[in-house]
Image 1 (cartoon, rainbow, N blue to C red):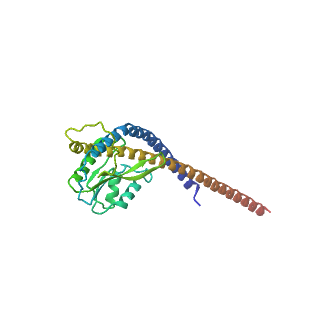
Image 2 (image 1 turned 45 degrees about the horizontal axis):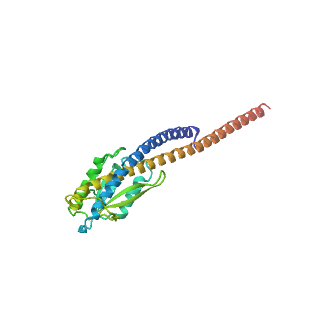
Image 3 (image 1 turned 120 degrees about the vertical axis):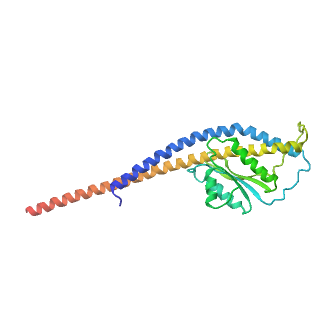
Length: 278
């Protein structure tokens, strides 16, 4: 059984950890609130770009020019730091489940970069230090590189692995295909006129479509990351609280045992002195 001093030291250590996890939970909650606002503010913009892109595509009849490459480009969205539960682990697991040796990878976030280096998986582009406030430039860099590989016939498919936000406790790693597009736009009576023609406009809007989509999924992944971190810190705080209660109980038992033993020794010593006097 541990000594009183050892138990006391453990209680002090866990109380310190509890304060840290509680503070991190509050920080994650504030950042989650800001990330949700950001996601709401860009939702209409991203949706408009996507709808315009598909409407232009629906006006091009001979768009079925296939890319000959069998390789897939995966764009991975991870976090810069840990302490966010299984957020990064689920992303890497989903990649490894679908990844083939000849495929190419663009990775966003320091944790994804270090995880792939640990597994000795080569990457074509690494963008670290994403930050808590998502910068559109990072999405643009990844989008331009992805489109260049696709147009140069280096890859035949572009997919992005991100974390879809469902609610504050549910967020799932997902794969979304960017190119070639698999979404079927329901063409209605369009009032749009294209000048000079839909193909030229499509070529010019495609980089914007890809970058805006990556940006939108980066922000959504950030919301999921903060939700996961807030949940992880909340669980850690509760676990620390339970452990402190158990250690306090153990401390009191050991203390009571020591007191009982001391009393027993005093009584035994007193009886011995009486016998000697007799």
